[in-house]
Length: 303
Image 1: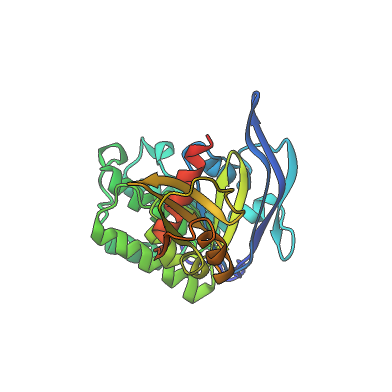
Image 2: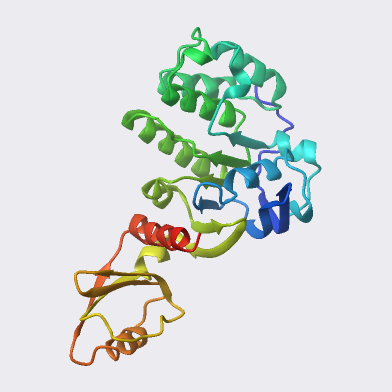
């Protein structure tokens, strides 16, 4: 099947406002607000059960909303058009268990307007997929590669990826990240990606949103996340203190207090030094992965 000449391939974003999804008495999404601007890539970070997968299913219309709204931007799209122009890469391929790789590709190609056969063939070759293999016989990594192919072969304007690299070997891992970069360069594709691999998010996102208990609790530009997050090692441990609003995570180690802070400034450092006038405060730079991990630890501590 050749790509459709009439399919609108321009990127579009999604605006989630006050989104609520419930499973019985459980608030899976509890007034969630998140906007992905056209052409932007947003990473979604949170604990298991925080609502990441539920948000993806709500965007594609699988989970009904109990409140709030989800709409395309800059202009609203009816759900059929939104789905036709979106791509979804789930963390499991259970829907295709009775097929071979080739039959799954043919099935999706028949359903997808604008399915790009040449691009699909390139993806299959690059990721080393065997079209004759039955999907249940594939390894977890091979299934993840196939899920990626099925989700992006129609060159979507909005791409949703739920843990897309689980079980993928190092070579295919880098190949998939390279293909995502191509999609962004060649058609300015908008992306929402959930992943526990913080280093990957650093490579492919413009912004990172932290989700906990069905709400977005913090957002930051990816480049700013490490630059403005620091770990302060305070010796000796202060006898008394009030954690500042900038504090992300506080722990104690070997007679010192270790505090990760967001929005680090010289004024904040002076305040902390005031806790230990005769002591020492060391400032430690963090990677994006470390900055994200300390936020995850804080979520675990308050669970």
